[in-house]
Length: 337
Image (cartoon, rainbow, N blue to C red; front, side, top):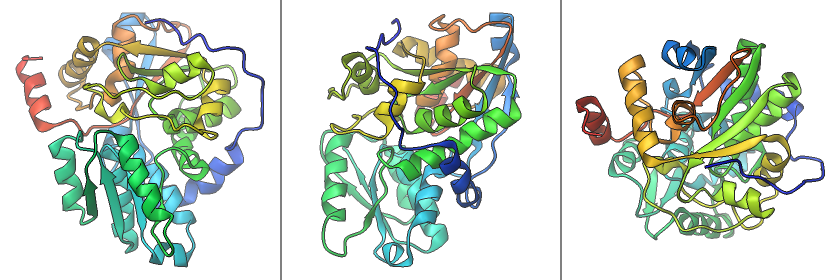
Protein backbone atom coordinates (compact mmCIF):
# COMPACT_ATOMS: atom_id res chain seq x y z
CA UNK A 1 0.00 0.00 0.00
CA UNK A 2 1.42 3.37 -0.96
CA UNK A 3 1.48 6.72 0.80
CA UNK A 4 -1.64 8.41 2.08
CA UNK A 5 -1.28 11.23 -0.48
CA UNK A 6 -2.93 13.87 1.70
CA UNK A 7 -4.26 17.07 0.18
CA UNK A 8 -2.26 20.24 0.78
CA UNK A 9 -2.77 21.33 4.39
CA UNK A 10 -2.18 24.93 5.50
CA UNK A 11 -0.12 25.32 8.66
CA UNK A 12 -2.25 26.20 11.69
CA UNK A 13 -1.46 26.42 15.41
CA UNK A 14 -1.36 22.94 16.92
CA UNK A 15 -2.85 21.92 20.30
CA UNK A 16 0.44 20.49 21.64
CA UNK A 17 3.95 21.94 21.54
CA UNK A 18 7.38 21.04 22.88
CA UNK A 19 6.93 23.16 26.00
CA UNK A 20 3.77 21.22 26.91
CA UNK A 21 5.60 17.91 26.55
CA UNK A 22 8.54 19.04 28.64
CA UNK A 23 6.20 20.46 31.30
CA UNK A 24 4.38 17.13 31.73
CA UNK A 25 7.54 15.02 31.79
CA UNK A 26 7.89 14.90 35.59
CA UNK A 27 4.34 13.55 35.97
CA UNK A 28 5.07 10.87 33.36
CA UNK A 29 8.33 9.80 34.94
CA UNK A 30 6.58 9.05 38.26
CA UNK A 31 4.95 6.04 36.61
CA UNK A 32 6.64 5.33 33.25
CA UNK A 33 10.14 4.19 32.35
CA UNK A 34 12.67 5.90 30.11
CA UNK A 35 12.73 3.01 27.65
CA UNK A 36 15.87 1.78 25.90
CA UNK A 37 16.84 1.82 22.25
CA UNK A 38 18.08 -1.60 21.12
CA UNK A 39 19.94 -2.06 17.86
CA UNK A 40 18.42 -4.61 15.49
CA UNK A 41 21.35 -6.21 13.74
CA UNK A 42 19.06 -8.17 11.43
CA UNK A 43 17.09 -5.11 10.28
CA UNK A 44 20.29 -3.08 10.02
CA UNK A 45 21.81 -5.69 7.74
CA UNK A 46 18.62 -5.77 5.67
CA UNK A 47 18.80 -2.05 4.83
CA UNK A 48 22.61 -1.78 5.07
CA UNK A 49 22.19 0.91 7.69
CA UNK A 50 21.34 1.41 11.35
CA UNK A 51 17.98 0.43 12.84
CA UNK A 52 17.15 0.81 16.53
CA UNK A 53 14.03 -0.48 18.27
CA UNK A 54 12.42 1.83 20.84
CA UNK A 55 11.21 -0.69 23.40
CA UNK A 56 7.99 0.63 24.87
CA UNK A 57 7.33 -3.08 25.41
CA UNK A 58 9.19 -2.88 28.74
CA UNK A 59 6.86 -0.30 30.30
CA UNK A 60 5.18 -1.45 33.56
CA UNK A 61 1.89 -2.06 31.72
CA UNK A 62 3.56 -3.43 28.59
CA UNK A 63 2.88 -0.43 26.34
CA UNK A 64 3.51 3.29 25.77
CA UNK A 65 0.00 4.13 26.98
CA UNK A 66 1.20 4.55 30.55
CA UNK A 67 2.81 7.84 29.48
CA UNK A 68 -0.46 9.49 28.51
CA UNK A 69 -2.34 8.07 31.48
CA UNK A 70 0.30 9.34 33.91
CA UNK A 71 0.26 12.76 32.28
CA UNK A 72 -3.52 13.11 32.45
CA UNK A 73 -4.07 11.83 35.97
CA UNK A 74 -1.12 13.89 37.16
CA UNK A 75 -2.79 17.01 35.78
CA UNK A 76 -6.17 16.50 37.50
CA UNK A 77 -7.36 18.55 40.46
CA UNK A 78 -8.17 16.77 43.74
CA UNK A 79 -11.93 17.04 43.22
CA UNK A 80 -11.62 15.49 39.76
CA UNK A 81 -9.62 12.59 41.17
CA UNK A 82 -12.18 12.08 43.93
CA UNK A 83 -14.88 11.47 41.31
CA UNK A 84 -12.76 8.77 39.72
CA UNK A 85 -11.77 8.40 36.08
CA UNK A 86 -13.31 6.62 33.12
CA UNK A 87 -12.06 5.69 29.69
CA UNK A 88 -12.60 3.34 26.76
CA UNK A 89 -9.86 1.11 25.45
CA UNK A 90 -8.99 -2.00 23.45
CA UNK A 91 -6.82 -2.93 26.40
CA UNK A 92 -3.53 -1.05 26.57
CA UNK A 93 -4.89 2.43 27.34
CA UNK A 94 -7.37 1.00 29.82
CA UNK A 95 -4.65 -1.03 31.48
CA UNK A 96 -2.46 2.07 31.77
CA UNK A 97 -5.26 4.19 33.24
CA UNK A 98 -6.15 1.44 35.72
CA UNK A 99 -2.48 0.99 36.71
CA UNK A 100 -1.85 4.69 37.33
CA UNK A 101 -5.20 5.14 39.04
CA UNK A 102 -4.50 2.27 41.44
CA UNK A 103 -1.07 3.72 42.24
CA UNK A 104 -2.73 7.08 43.03
CA UNK A 105 -5.65 5.60 44.96
CA UNK A 106 -8.20 6.68 42.34
CA UNK A 107 -11.22 4.64 41.18
CA UNK A 108 -11.16 3.75 37.46
CA UNK A 109 -13.84 2.45 35.10
CA UNK A 110 -12.84 1.00 31.71
CA UNK A 111 -15.35 0.69 28.86
CA UNK A 112 -14.60 -2.06 26.32
CA UNK A 113 -16.18 -3.42 23.17
CA UNK A 114 -17.01 -7.10 22.77
CA UNK A 115 -13.98 -7.41 20.43
CA UNK A 116 -11.29 -7.01 23.08
CA UNK A 117 -9.20 -10.20 23.48
CA UNK A 118 -9.91 -12.23 26.60
CA UNK A 119 -6.33 -11.94 27.81
CA UNK A 120 -6.51 -8.17 27.91
CA UNK A 121 -9.83 -8.30 29.75
CA UNK A 122 -8.25 -10.59 32.35
CA UNK A 123 -5.30 -8.22 32.74
CA UNK A 124 -7.68 -5.35 33.46
CA UNK A 125 -9.63 -7.41 35.98
CA UNK A 126 -6.42 -8.09 37.90
CA UNK A 127 -5.84 -4.34 38.24
CA UNK A 128 -9.02 -3.97 40.25
CA UNK A 129 -10.83 -1.52 38.00
CA UNK A 130 -14.51 -1.62 37.08
CA UNK A 131 -15.19 -3.00 33.58
CA UNK A 132 -18.08 -1.98 31.32
CA UNK A 133 -18.04 -4.45 28.39
CA UNK A 134 -20.42 -4.40 25.43
CA UNK A 135 -21.10 -3.17 21.93
CA UNK A 136 -19.63 -3.93 18.51
CA UNK A 137 -16.84 -1.35 18.42
CA UNK A 138 -14.56 0.92 20.39
CA UNK A 139 -16.53 3.90 19.13
CA UNK A 140 -19.57 2.55 20.99
CA UNK A 141 -17.44 2.04 24.10
CA UNK A 142 -16.22 5.64 23.88
CA UNK A 143 -19.82 6.84 23.66
CA UNK A 144 -20.63 5.09 26.94
CA UNK A 145 -17.56 6.58 28.63
CA UNK A 146 -18.39 10.08 27.40
CA UNK A 147 -22.02 9.77 28.52
CA UNK A 148 -20.94 8.73 32.02
CA UNK A 149 -18.42 11.56 32.31
CA UNK A 150 -21.06 14.11 31.23
CA UNK A 151 -23.27 13.32 34.22
CA UNK A 152 -23.24 15.63 37.25
CA UNK A 153 -20.41 14.58 39.53
CA UNK A 154 -19.52 11.89 36.98
CA UNK A 155 -16.01 10.45 36.59
CA UNK A 156 -13.36 12.38 34.68
CA UNK A 157 -12.88 11.21 31.12
CA UNK A 158 -9.36 10.10 30.14
CA UNK A 159 -9.55 9.90 26.37
CA UNK A 160 -6.99 7.72 24.62
CA UNK A 161 -5.98 10.44 22.14
CA UNK A 162 -8.48 13.34 21.92
CA UNK A 163 -6.78 15.16 24.79
CA UNK A 164 -3.75 17.46 24.43
CA UNK A 165 -2.46 16.42 27.87
CA UNK A 166 -2.53 12.73 26.92
CA UNK A 167 -0.80 13.52 23.61
CA UNK A 168 1.85 15.53 25.47
CA UNK A 169 2.43 12.53 27.72
CA UNK A 170 2.97 10.27 24.71
CA UNK A 171 5.33 12.92 23.35
CA UNK A 172 7.83 12.13 26.10
CA UNK A 173 8.69 9.07 24.00
CA UNK A 174 9.74 11.47 21.25
CA UNK A 175 11.86 13.48 23.67
CA UNK A 176 13.73 10.32 24.59
CA UNK A 177 14.26 9.32 20.96
CA UNK A 178 15.75 12.72 20.13
CA UNK A 179 17.99 12.64 23.21
CA UNK A 180 19.08 9.03 22.72
CA UNK A 181 19.59 9.26 18.95
CA UNK A 182 20.35 12.84 17.84
CA UNK A 183 21.45 11.37 14.49
CA UNK A 184 18.00 9.86 13.87
CA UNK A 185 16.73 10.50 10.35
CA UNK A 186 13.53 8.42 10.32
CA UNK A 187 11.02 7.37 12.98
CA UNK A 188 8.43 4.66 12.26
CA UNK A 189 5.44 4.87 14.59
CA UNK A 190 2.31 2.70 14.93
CA UNK A 191 -0.77 4.71 13.97
CA UNK A 192 -4.38 4.43 15.12
CA UNK A 193 -6.12 7.44 16.65
CA UNK A 194 -2.83 9.29 16.46
CA UNK A 195 -1.99 9.95 20.11
CA UNK A 196 1.45 8.35 20.01
CA UNK A 197 2.55 9.61 16.62
CA UNK A 198 1.25 13.12 17.33
CA UNK A 199 3.23 13.44 20.54
CA UNK A 200 6.35 11.94 18.98
CA UNK A 201 6.01 14.12 15.88
CA UNK A 202 5.77 17.33 17.92
CA UNK A 203 8.86 16.44 19.97
CA UNK A 204 10.99 15.09 17.13
CA UNK A 205 10.07 17.90 14.72
CA UNK A 206 11.15 20.48 17.30
CA UNK A 207 14.37 18.73 18.31
CA UNK A 208 15.39 16.99 15.06
CA UNK A 209 13.81 19.10 12.29
CA UNK A 210 15.37 17.07 9.47
CA UNK A 211 14.04 13.72 10.66
CA UNK A 212 11.13 12.11 8.80
CA UNK A 213 8.14 10.62 10.65
CA UNK A 214 6.11 7.82 9.07
CA UNK A 215 2.99 6.27 10.53
CA UNK A 216 2.30 2.58 10.01
CA UNK A 217 -1.05 0.85 10.31
CA UNK A 218 -2.80 -2.32 9.17
CA UNK A 219 -4.48 -2.66 5.77
CA UNK A 220 -8.07 -3.03 6.99
CA UNK A 221 -9.70 -0.45 9.23
CA UNK A 222 -6.91 2.15 9.12
CA UNK A 223 -9.10 5.13 10.02
CA UNK A 224 -6.41 7.81 10.26
CA UNK A 225 -4.92 6.77 6.91
CA UNK A 226 -8.28 7.15 5.19
CA UNK A 227 -9.02 10.37 7.07
CA UNK A 228 -5.80 11.99 5.92
CA UNK A 229 -6.51 10.91 2.35
CA UNK A 230 -9.99 12.43 2.57
CA UNK A 231 -8.83 15.62 4.25
CA UNK A 232 -11.28 15.10 7.12
CA UNK A 233 -12.06 12.45 9.75
CA UNK A 234 -13.90 9.45 8.31
CA UNK A 235 -15.55 6.45 9.91
CA UNK A 236 -14.57 2.87 9.04
CA UNK A 237 -15.88 -0.49 10.13
CA UNK A 238 -13.49 -2.42 12.34
CA UNK A 239 -11.98 -5.60 10.90
CA UNK A 240 -10.32 -8.52 12.65
CA UNK A 241 -6.58 -7.96 12.77
CA UNK A 242 -3.44 -8.99 14.60
CA UNK A 243 -3.01 -5.28 15.31
CA UNK A 244 -6.16 -5.12 17.45
CA UNK A 245 -4.75 -2.22 19.48
CA UNK A 246 -4.93 -0.09 16.32
CA UNK A 247 -8.67 -0.61 15.92
CA UNK A 248 -11.14 2.23 16.37
CA UNK A 249 -12.03 5.54 14.80
CA UNK A 250 -10.35 8.93 14.98
CA UNK A 251 -13.38 10.89 16.19
CA UNK A 252 -15.73 12.83 13.93
CA UNK A 253 -14.59 16.20 15.32
CA UNK A 254 -10.93 15.44 15.93
CA UNK A 255 -9.17 18.76 16.50
CA UNK A 256 -6.27 17.26 18.44
CA UNK A 257 -4.42 14.47 16.66
CA UNK A 258 -5.86 14.84 13.15
CA UNK A 259 -4.33 18.29 12.48
CA UNK A 260 -1.01 17.19 13.98
CA UNK A 261 -0.86 14.12 11.75
CA UNK A 262 -1.87 16.25 8.74
CA UNK A 263 0.88 18.78 9.32
CA UNK A 264 3.78 16.87 10.88
CA UNK A 265 3.65 13.27 9.64
CA UNK A 266 5.48 12.78 6.34
CA UNK A 267 3.75 9.61 5.19
CA UNK A 268 1.48 6.76 6.23
CA UNK A 269 1.95 3.19 5.00
CA UNK A 270 -0.09 0.04 5.55
CA UNK A 271 1.01 -3.54 6.14
CA UNK A 272 -0.86 -6.81 5.57
CA UNK A 273 -1.80 -9.43 8.15
CA UNK A 274 0.82 -11.81 6.73
CA UNK A 275 3.44 -9.09 7.06
CA UNK A 276 2.36 -8.46 10.64
CA UNK A 277 2.65 -12.14 11.53
CA UNK A 278 6.08 -12.26 9.90
CA UNK A 279 7.22 -9.22 11.90
CA UNK A 280 5.98 -10.62 15.21
CA UNK A 281 7.76 -13.91 14.52
CA UNK A 282 10.91 -12.05 13.47
CA UNK A 283 10.99 -10.09 16.74
CA UNK A 284 10.58 -13.30 18.74
CA UNK A 285 13.21 -15.26 16.79
CA UNK A 286 15.84 -12.60 16.27
CA UNK A 287 15.49 -10.62 19.50
CA UNK A 288 13.60 -12.90 21.90
CA UNK A 289 11.20 -9.97 21.99
CA UNK A 290 7.43 -10.29 22.42
CA UNK A 291 5.75 -7.56 20.38
CA UNK A 292 1.99 -7.38 19.87
CA UNK A 293 0.67 -6.87 16.34
CA UNK A 294 0.23 -3.12 16.76
CA UNK A 295 3.78 -2.81 18.06
CA UNK A 296 5.25 -4.80 15.17
CA UNK A 297 3.93 -2.66 12.30
CA UNK A 298 7.18 -0.71 11.94
CA UNK A 299 9.23 -3.89 11.73
CA UNK A 300 6.75 -5.22 9.17
CA UNK A 301 7.06 -2.06 7.08
CA UNK A 302 10.82 -2.47 6.82
CA UNK A 303 10.82 -6.21 6.21
CA UNK A 304 8.10 -5.93 3.54
CA UNK A 305 9.76 -3.00 1.81
CA UNK A 306 6.86 -0.62 2.53
CA UNK A 307 9.46 1.90 3.60
CA UNK A 308 13.06 2.08 2.44
CA UNK A 309 15.19 3.78 5.10
CA UNK A 310 18.32 5.60 4.01
CA UNK A 311 21.50 3.77 5.01
CA UNK A 312 23.04 7.18 5.73
CA UNK A 313 20.96 7.90 8.84
CA UNK A 314 19.62 5.98 11.82
CA UNK A 315 16.07 4.63 11.73
CA UNK A 316 14.13 4.28 14.98
CA UNK A 317 11.23 1.82 15.04
CA UNK A 318 8.80 2.35 17.91
CA UNK A 319 7.69 -1.03 19.28
CA UNK A 320 4.67 0.28 21.11
CA UNK A 321 3.50 -2.72 23.12
CA UNK A 322 4.15 -6.29 24.24
CA UNK A 323 0.62 -7.36 25.17
CA UNK A 324 0.05 -10.09 22.62
CA UNK A 325 -2.27 -12.94 23.54
CA UNK A 326 -0.43 -15.94 25.01
CA UNK A 327 -2.03 -18.20 22.39
CA UNK A 328 -0.64 -15.95 19.65
CA UNK A 329 2.84 -16.03 21.19
CA UNK A 330 2.70 -19.82 21.37
CA UNK A 331 1.74 -20.04 17.69
CA UNK A 332 4.59 -17.72 16.78
CA UNK A 333 7.09 -19.72 18.81
CA UNK A 334 5.95 -23.00 17.26
CA UNK A 335 6.05 -21.62 13.72
CA UNK A 336 2.30 -22.12 13.16
CA UNK A 337 1.86 -18.51 12.02
